[in-house]
Image (cartoon, rainbow, N blue to C red; front, side, top):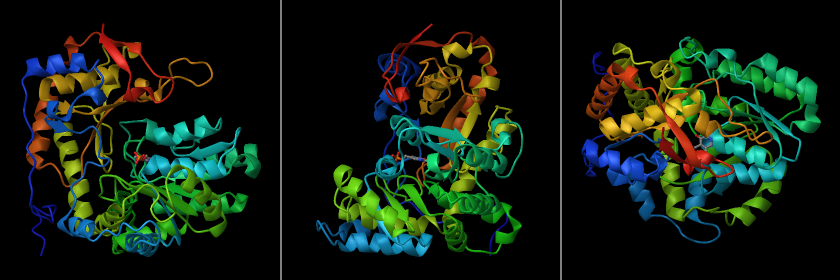
Length: 461
Ligand SMILES: *Cc1c(COP(=O)(O)O)cnc(C)c1O
């Protein structure tokens, strides 16, 4: 029986622990300056609570470690590949599996086969590497997300949804000749880990079929998406997570997966496809860029651990404790009136820097300034999702100012306790209390031509 007050207690206990170190504000002041105010340049020992990303930072289970030991490292025909292929087919229904070293490897392989110069790829706020892989091929990522996704104070249960009118307008304007496929990201990372409803997926799928355009999922957090469907769409209340996942994937022609998220592993990815013809086109590039078709950049043991991880990630008890921990932190922050994007998504809290530090000019990178402050005060590492990440327009080379200036606090899977979440809330409460003192931000002293946020260097104004 569920005790109502504690329905989200973790369905696991701790077998191994890893030490993390608190540091002093003086140490952090020095370290962040040495890192040119780029949080990606910090050493892990300089960070107390690392919420930079939920990608590849989760804890594996004893079952996954056991499967690591059983990994079959044969170049071709590995048992671990078969285990992964069977698991992916059982969970998604997709018959053709192409392993890759991680999600962007999958993007590179599939887009090499399908995207050409001048193409238009509609979707719901494409992920940054997805967008970069599209733009690298001189094609355009067209955002067709519903307008509600841009209003951080507006409640909508499925803010990752695609606007069907925007999508159909694009279909009419560009047609099948210029639109090789549509890509729907579940959950939508860039919109704040917001889910896409089954209803919307059905409608998008029907529209794609009507125009003869394939539909793919960017499925890094597909399991978290199914949890929201179960909780928020009445029709699915009594369905299991695995049933919901199966139905969701039945509407698509394939998926790109970063296994570092809902695969519950530290590295890995894959493409899974319904149709053989696309598979045949894509494997040519897989062999070129990733590796042979039965390992594609992954060790046998990694494929084994991923197979087990996919099964564990699609269990209700796990998903409930995972998503509800994120929501626990979100609720604490809302109680403290710290401006966060609402509703809270599946894997992260997004601080709304436009409301948090409106006193810092946008040209001085508001969200980045807030992320730096969070590190200085609490040793907590988040990530800017704002003007720095939005990068420059590829044609005009002007800064692109996105509608949202966010700091993402991504919660790793099965790693931190709610005591850590309480600490994060206390630090933010302190910063929020002193927010009016923040008047100036940072300026760029170095940036690369593409994906600048990883290596950009800044100085304090
Ligand atoms: C992480 C992620 C990717 C890229 O995957 P990597 O494994 O980091 O290369 C693509 N799309 C989404 C939605 C992601 O979250």
